[in-house]
Image 1: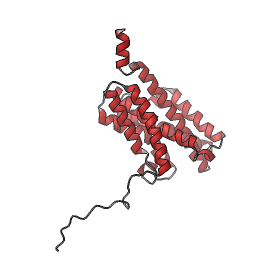
Image 2: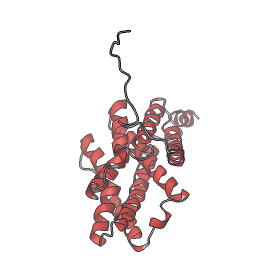
Image 3: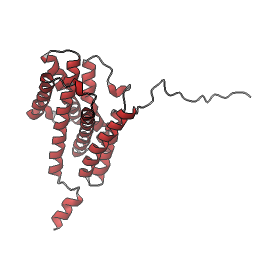
Image 4: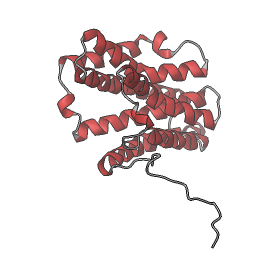
Amino acid sequence: MGGGRCWYVSGWLSPEKVAEVTRALDLSGVFTNGVLGGVLARDRDLDLFGFLVIGVVSGLGGGVIRDTLLQHGTPVALTDYTYIATATAATLLAFVFDLSRHTSGLAFTLLDGAALSVWAVAGAQKTLAAGLGWLPAVLLGTITAVGGGVVRDLLLGRIPRVFGGSPLYATIAALVSVVMVVCSGLGVPTLGILVGVGGGTLLRLAALTWGWMLPNGRDWRPRSTRHRDP
């Protein structure tokens, strides 16, 4: 009875189960972003090798950057072959089937938002599990979510979408990371996973639907504080 109460108060899942869920989320993000990378590779008319490079970088880049910054051993993508296999399978799926016609549909939008959110959750949770504080968790959660896409866009000669010109993206990853950090601090990491992934996906959908973007240099100008004589 007492053990069950501790299990519930600790956040519905034991630390081991939270780690398993985090890994599953990590791999789902790898697969989704591998597919997204493959779609962009097809748009650039790349060959199979180009597909694999763009897809694998898109799927694994954010996690590798995160693990490198954490300095807790070799990046998991290089020690757990499931990660490379997942990214490769996702890329080959996009190579065999032309998925680009579906990129403007609701399903693809939800997939994109879910991938962004699950990686932010996984990145923040892994950082907290490594013993770091809330600020590194938010930063690395965001980097996990957007890092692979940034490297992918640079390889394709595009301005990374996290730098602007598109609806909210990195901002959502940061917000999801904050939700995960707060819920973990309150002892309910499972709630953080559910709210972070669900809320982040819906927020991304809303941003795409209504075109929510942060202001850029042309949209915002500071008021002049220079004194004017009457």
